[in-house]
Amino acid sequence: MKKILVVLLIGLMVFSVGCTNSAPEEVAEQEADTAVFPENDLKIIVPFDPGGGVDVTCRIIASLAPDALDDKSIIVENVPGGGGVIGQTAGAQADPDGYTVLAYTSSVISNPMTKETVYTHESFAPVAMYCFDPDVLIVPADSPFNTVQELIDYAKENEVTLTTPGNASAHHIAGMILEDKTGVKFSYIHNDGAAMQIAQIMGGHVDCGLMTLGEAVSQIQEGSLKSLGIMSDERAADLPDLQTFQEQGLDIMYGAWRGLAVPVDTPDDRVEALGEIFEKIIDNDQFKTKMAEAGIPMIYRGPEEFKAYVDQQAENLKIILPKITANQ
Image 1 (cartoon, rainbow, N blue to C red):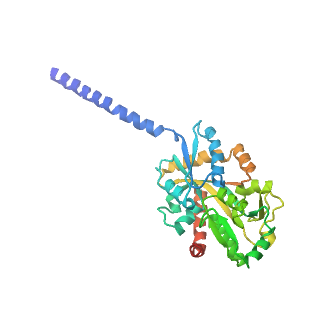
Image 2 (cartoon, one colour):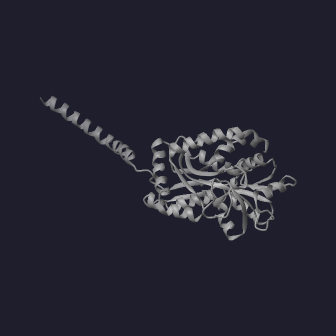
Image 3 (cartoon, rainbow, N blue to C red):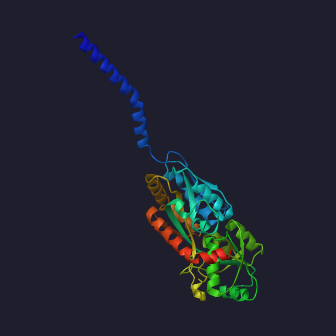
């Protein structure tokens, strides 16, 4: 009987020790499973210089982060260079934990098709699209040109320099579309952002430039820049006197889309969580007001719809890829 009691006591002690040793691990696992993402601040990498449309819109998003993130912040980090390649590389190589987000634009599609990169658009999981911004053709305020056709007529007999934010950028592609429609040939001046484009045009260092409406609307309204036309199907509410290209006899509708994405290996639940966070910010009345004040048109697409849109844009770009590479 005593032997039986001793065995039972030893068994209870072993069981008790085992429970004590395993409990902290089990608790830690349970706590990890129930941790709410995000626990820390998020970061958006903007692969362009400060002051452009991508930078401005990301800072609008960041300004509204505390309400959507329980007082946590979104930090905007500019990583310009290579027409977006340097920052996009940083975004692709970031830890796939959902805490580093890339400002995702059409150049993520075009750069890998025209340059040496370690990523493609498929290296990212799209999270949210928040903007489609039509291109406008800009000239210095004292330019003799007042219509698109006047500029085109001049370009048929003379060299015309056109500034873009980078080779194979959406605005470079818009220029090549304009070439196809009119038979002219531009001399492209590529740089790393809209701020430099504006400085080049205002300083009279180039004849014209293509950028989005949101990037140039303030300068157009105040008269320091002149726009000859907008590549949309209707006039902009902020510039009701600015004719569309269609009104001027050119069937061109083109612009830049902007969104957010994370590395493709980011867990699905975190992509979904980020989608909900950014949808909440984009649906905020303050966001809509600030975007309207900046003259930047907005649109919303969630992760799945945004991915389908990006994939279709990639297929469309492949069609004109030979012309892009020929212009390098």
